[in-house]
Length: 95
Image (cartoon, rainbow, N blue to C red; front, top):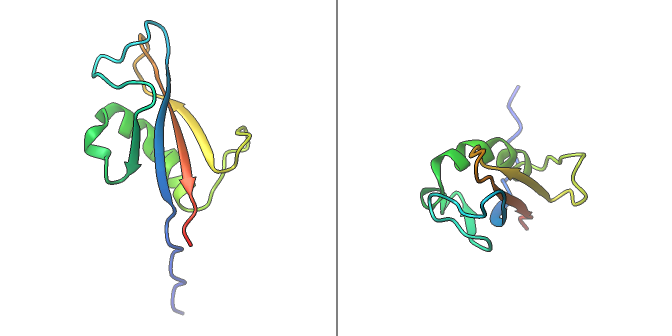
């Protein structure tokens, strides 16, 4: 029996919305910075990329997070406990 093709993944935009604690990212990321997934992965802190990847895949393939008000977004922090950078991941629906 042939497999059904996977749906085309949605585009993802990631925005830095806050930097907690001291308000400075040691790698120089700043509030308002935007990234396109996967094109800008190399511009992001590798630890943030590893942290965001599972949520990015959920949104890319149509999933949602029940605790988020907007089904097309998720917010996560990088693992730096001294200066957590808060990222908003937004699904840009494909046509």
